[in-house]
Image (cartoon, rainbow, N blue to C red; front, side, top):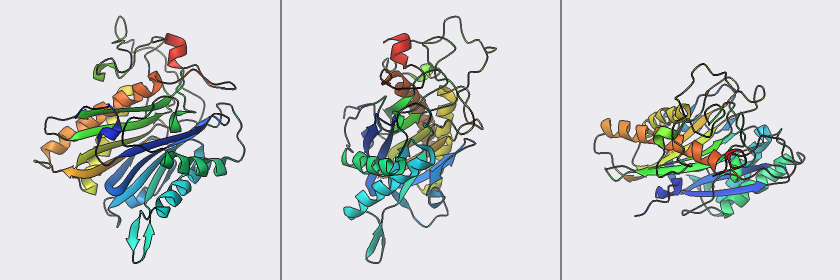
Length: 332
């Protein structure tokens, strides 16, 4: 089967986005209505999350029905209520006798200083959460300035929503989805080359290759804003059969992908979060070796997704208070 180079190449995964240009923000959802084994790894110093304790290996609930990535900082937490209500109306959820409770985990990023109107945010995010569910597809979806990536920024460029995928030799598919909003840079110095360039496939983010003359390791760091003004949120997914403990290991390994694509990363100014989902279609032949291969692929794929999100970002909208997009600064 031909890959779309998106997280929806993983069977059992659907993705939807909603955004509002008047408030320069948005919401992305990853739906697994049949349920998926899930865990999470949090590395940044300023995270904002919901239901992540339930994803711990010793948690009672074995699977989740949705992951929400949202802008809006604490206001964005309202997006999960819209997603939860949408799933509940369709009878999706963890069964407790005759009741069903959708298990929806969430992480938020800060995009409140990028311009646009910033009133009535909680109501807006709840509505966008439901709208993102309505728009969810298991096929192709847009990248760049959509969903949770709409209001995102990096140290010197507009951020964005990125995705990528790969199929391993054993037939297992790995995909990644990311809202790139880091305090650091995704590109190298003043040039158009991406930190993630060694992992690029088929010129998916421009094929610019490495920085001319090699890396200048003594170049000064470029950081965006102040405390709590950043965060990169990601979901990695696979159709492998995993336990919660194995999914946790994949999430931990996938964080390496952020380190390959962002400089610096996991700072006190970020709230970096990576969720892992396993839809359970293909068993691992070797639970140790194959898990190592899978986690490594998740890291590489996530690095590619970060660069794609920034590369695909649109020209900035009217009223935007952040940096220009990659297209505006470097072209295609």
